[in-house]
Amino acid sequence: MLSSSVDTIYPCPFSKGYGIPVRQAWLMLKIFALYRFVTACLFVMLFYLRFGPSLLGSYDASLYQFTSVAYLGISLIAAPVAFRPRWAYASLAQLFIFTDIVFITLLMHASGGIGSGIGILLAISIAAGGLLIGGRCAMLFAALASLAILAEEVYAIEIHAFENTTLTYAGMLGVSFFSIAFLSVILAQRAEQSAVLARRHEQTIARLESLNRYIIQHLQSGIMIVDERQVTQLSNQSALRLLGLVLHPEELTEVAPELRQAFELWRNNRDQDFAIIRLANRSEVQVRFSELRMDDEALYMLIFEDIALYNQRLQQSKLASLGRLTASIAHEIRNPLSAISHAGQLLSEAPDLDVQELRLTEIIQHHCQRVNSIIEDILKLSRRNPSQKQKIALDQWLPAYLDDQKLNLGERAECFKLIFKAQGLNACIDSGHLKQILDNLCANALQYGKPELGDIMLEVSQMQEVPCIKIIDNGAGIAAEHRQHLFEPFFTTSHQGTGLGLYISRELAELNQAELSYAAHSGKPCFTLLLANADHAVIEI
Image (cartoon, rainbow, N blue to C red; front, side, top):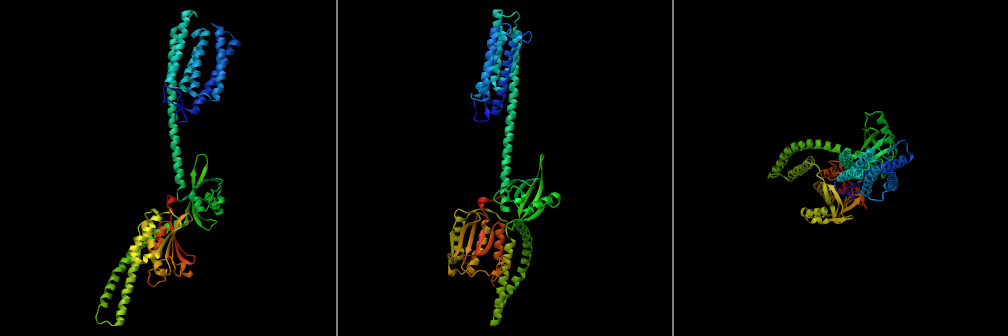
């Protein structure tokens, strides 16, 4: 009887909970078939060759001849069946045990009964029954063997076949059969428990291995494992992305010659455990080396980090410190600035001021407001909250954003037109930060983009397998000499601006692993915002 699991056989119909692994069961059955064949050959050979005095067939030679030859013939027929399974395992194993009980009992009777010593061979068959079938069936075989021995002795006593017959020895032999069956069942149960425990451990190890493989593949840092010959054993997807590879490299030389040289230098001098590698596409990555101590071989782990991401984290740390400093300075400036503004307002209300003096008070108020705007932007920068990334469906979020703009901008919001060139895009970004970035970009487009010449386009598409938002206006664009300073703080070509809008927008974009850039699009000014794809989000370490 096969269980629902193809790896386990439940051979005993009276003990359905006792199972044996398939490979182990058939291996034991093959060994037992070989034992039966060898035993049958010995029975025949020892009878016909007659090496000295023997009890074999001493009582009934014809019965011994027929039984031994039949036993050998059945063993010859059964051996190929065990090695090339065609029958059910349980049926074949039970047939082996039953035939052993019958033929060994007959051989024992033909050789003079219990005194011949042949009956002790049944103990091996009973033990085999406990291992091959087990459960309550092992006790059944022991009971059948004991009954066969007792029946043979009772029959011999009735016909006065032997001079000396004893039921005591037959009873002791039966007790030994039960003892052997009981011990074999206990041993088989322990073996089964060990096998179950081993399978559980194997499943646990397999789950842990699968989990580790999943974690390694989804790390943002690139991981590569190499051996002493610099042959790659493992590399995750992040490593391929950072190194600009499509297929997993077989050796370090395929990545970059500088990487192989840096690895060899590290093996000679373990103090310098990191290096900066320039790739074929002229991008740079940082690599750290470490050794993995294994029992049988030496392996080495290479951890790749994006230099841009590393500089971004460093920049964020510096900006955090600078933000706290500028916030303190801004608060200190705001107090005297408020006093100046208030004094200028009172001065402008004086009744005896001429036109030139009123103009001076207007200049004071204008520049006080400008300085106050700068302070407000600086305070916004210093109060920037950490990014709370979430999955945003752009085809739902952007229309809602434009609806909010209609409430804030009124009729000016009609200048914006939303176009989706790709549907179903999901971005991983802080929704508040995305709103602040688009507010700045849309404000610039309204101020410098000449909306009277046409709609300001918000175009949603996919670039490099990531969501992309483009803001395209109809303005004159930014001069080439100004583009390299476009995202620097306090850089502006307008006398009215503070020069912090684009700077804050790029900082917010980088905080969310997005990228904000400027380029012409079909001859028109275009700001491009590349967002992190929420469908391919990775674990950041």
